[in-house]
Image (spheres, helix red, strand yellow):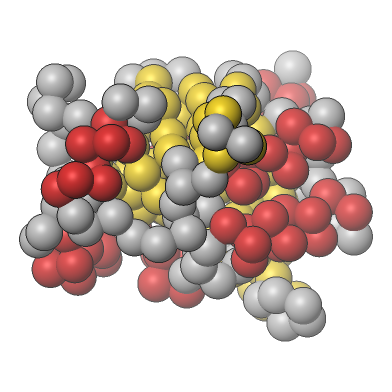
Length: 213
């Protein structure tokens, strides 16, 4: 069973439409079953924003829905200027770490994301924070440890790591995590969410085909 975590309905909406997903439950989170024409066993959940909401939803997918792989798809801010990534680009996260906490002065250990999905995309390092990053100082600090920033990915990856199952993180750049970030997200959310949806539906179909072989 594939369990997909989206943070918001706005991010999930294009995917739910393209995947002909139907609502099956709203407790404890909105849950949707993806059409078997896309993938034989796939559920999508809308967790709400932030690490706690994402982690709780991921745990629900593993323990109650028997997910054997977790996927987190959604928007992110771009921290690096060196790779010439632009708004709308899709990246596959190969490691994720919490960026706004430490353990007695020591940084968190990054979690690897090695499901083998989205192989045609460039790999990126992700940091996850409880608050959106729209300040130049914080952006520079986080850029030392990651290429991208979001509010959910590392939490989903850590749950997958805890339960010993694979995790795939698909991120679409919506902004540059700077002073204009809020305006950029509002302007680009719909388009980036649509791009993510098309890629995710295609990957689910590919994975379903590979599973049959």
